[in-house]
Length: 352
Length: 272
Image 1 (cartoon, helix red, strand yellow):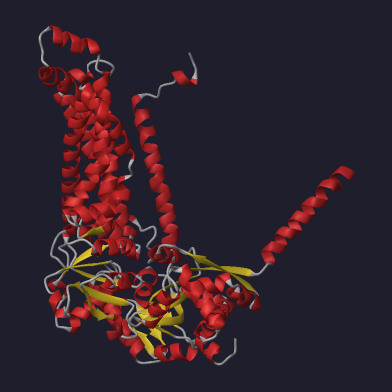
Image 2 (cartoon, chains in turn brown, red; image 1 turned 120 degrees about the vertical axis):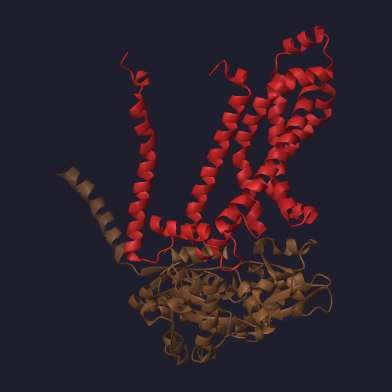
């Protein structure tokens, strides 16, 4: 009997602690990758701002940095993460086209010059691109930007030859003599423009609001756990508040983000200058609530369909429904991408 | 004796046992795929076989909307061209260097250590340099395969050359053969089947370099397609492409083995 109780006590303790762990706060995982508009997530994780907001709503949020942007989206799509940062186009073509109902929780910024088309040679114009090979990451927002650029001067994609080039090699490749035109994003863009005899002939500031950077979460998870939405949005706008200031705290925060993205404060400020950051929830709400949102998503969906990005099952560009505050673009029976203003509105109303 | 090491399965049983692991992998895949698709019919991670079939049918038998080419065959042709050219050059280069440094001591002394060191340089690390030297076109892709494979073949042939019994060389000399004649009549015939062996062993690395080169800057090729559709997680294209590459690799390997047996039957007389 004595021997038994000796054994039972630790067993009981173990069972208790295990069940305690089970009833502990629900935990979620979100991922992010290096980009000027997403560096705040790394900072918020480091400074425990995300932790603080998660605790406030009784949950746990694990913020994970992933080196490869596309890999992070694939991981989210495969169900390894509850949320992830990505552009509006990638959100439509990867998780939404993959049947994962996704909600854009935070519209953090839009590219306002961060993506550009560069031609070699001085005093070039966009029309000179005709007949050239253009090196870019195929099927990315760069590809979309090029399509929009060509459209603006009455050219078609068939008028150029697109060469798929890995972003990791873009700068090295630009130095070779075969390459005469590239389309890429920052910080690669500024690195390429710093080389002599390079002309930026088009950039995303000419299509404002079309390349958005989002924090998306799985719609089903968000519906079941509104706390996740509240905590992420709360943390985000606290970080925005810190970095948009002009005091020492803002400089410290931005310096930390600069170092984490491999540049210095001046370099990071330069990238911020070509990014329209939505420091206040009302700024983001203005874009999401505008009529432009669905028009943009229509352009993105049409481009994506033309390039086969909506999957084999898609008979037309409207195959996937995109829901915004002003209605739905595409198939209302197959809504897979939702722009939800609920949480950003709570932040704007100071109700978080 | 009834011991485990003496139990040999009969021919049909052997065949069955050989097929079994493949069948099991297929079944496990089917179960996992069905489970994921039941939850989300648009799931891209583990597509069903019919989805993969549809994807390949589109790529192989319908002209592309953008270029009008049959992408699957175009990819295969481009990749095989690059691989074939790369391996051919690597084999010729490796064979010449290997046989010369193996047979001629005055060449062995200065070049063998250099060859050893060169073969240890990881070719992938040289890619950015290759781009700048050879540009982004076909040349740099073929060059990567050559640089990756040739040193391996050269070292292997060099070793094989030195393994040829000295007695043979002495005998040829007593019959009055010059260095050139020994090279031509004694060494080359014996080393050609070894070369085919070395090529077979290095084909795996050749494919690796091919796909790596195509992933970086390209407009077609099997590796290009895989890295392109990876952008939207199109496993229905990636998995059949991987299977196709495996099949091509298997067929090439088998053809080389047959070629070797057909051309050098004496090499296979003993120790088979």
